[in-house]
Length: 47
Image (cartoon, one colour):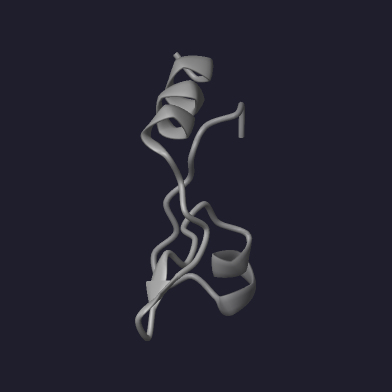
């Protein structure tokens, strides 16, 4: 899809697992920690 995002209403588990949303925090534990610098780099690459 031309490198863009696509919104899917009522996505299946398979579709959801391939999406951009990732687990960050669950049951008092952090997963996939991201720094502000990493976020800025990703944004700048997509501008």
